[in-house]
Length: 103
Image (cartoon, rainbow, N blue to C red; front, side):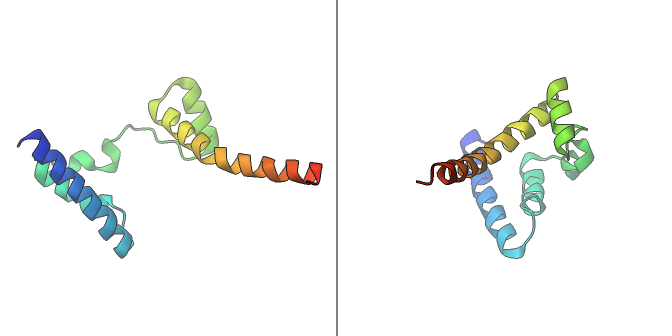
């Protein structure tokens, strides 16, 4: 299969999986994994949960300790956590400064 054709099919199926997953209340992986397994010729076992990194942090302490050790998924989770907390902290500090200055 041509790379461009593969990309177009992958993009279209990802959009379809996201939309259908949102409508049905399912995760997109329920729809995209069978499509990818058929397109790439991979076994569904290749997408099984236990075939992943073997470490996925589920608490703040696990994220920080994994990032200190240098585990890639922990570093990605730490980055996502900081990305989500940045606007929250910004709004909270703005409210505090607004109340202190009584502006």
